[in-house]
Image 1 (cartoon, rainbow, N blue to C red):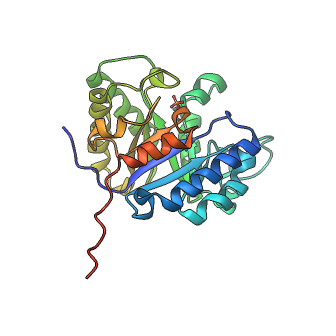
Image 2: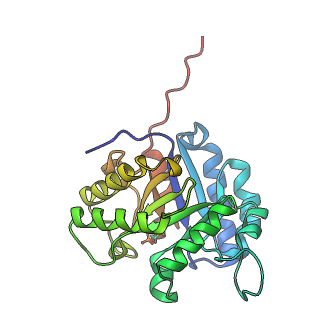
Amino acid sequence: MSRPITAPVLLGVSLKMYFGHHQTLNWARRIAALAERHPAVTSGAARLFVLPAFPALVPAAGLLTPYGVEIGAQDLATEDSGPYTGEVGGPTLKEIGCRYAEVGHAERRRLYGEGDTVVAAKTAAALRNGLTPVLCVGERDAAGPAVAAERTVAEAARLLHGLAGAVVLAYEPQWAIGAPEPAGADHIATVCTALRSWLDTRPEHAGSTVVYGGSAGPGLLTRLGGTAEGLFLGRFAHDPAGVEAILDEIRTPAPAAVA
Ligand SMILES: O=C(CO)COP(=O)(O)O
């Protein structure tokens, strides 16, 4: 079942609405310093991206992108411009340097009533604006791994129907978000492997990545043995030491011998 990690490992962080503005920028400075010196990042074995709140996108991009850490939004509008009060469109996100846009997070589904139609439209909006969707999928209630895999693949197929382009598929079982512990390693491995197998049959989504999110933190990547191609982090990235501990788990290429 375990599949070798096809480096680089993708590590995303959504700050959700936890931090204030200055707290976000202070955290970003510490992540930038980590990215500048950590061999997993400097060797290219790990790729990092950060999704702060909208107002922090521009200053956070200034702090992080010089060190190769990409930026993205936690949401985007279904439309590109027009009378959509309070929304932020894909063209604006692209213009300010975003590489990613998250769609379909369980909190947006549960708290703001977003359903499959909106999630699919936001995924399409991201793709047509040159943003990589971080498309969250995963079962709402706890289920066995085989059932979870079947449902999650069906969900991804439904949401991506008729679309083309590389995506980050974030497997986030909703019951594991905000929990003390992530889903079990075997459960995650079963679902992520199924998502990867499905993606492998979809040339229109070549270049896509499957990551796991939901109370992910230090120690998980090692337990997953390459079945997930990265992690989508929440609370356990708030302390930069947690991000560093995860980077420490990523094998970096041996330095070239000096003649
Ligand atoms: O929802 C998540 C990432 O999008 C995960 O959040 P937590 O790791 O804080 O549960």
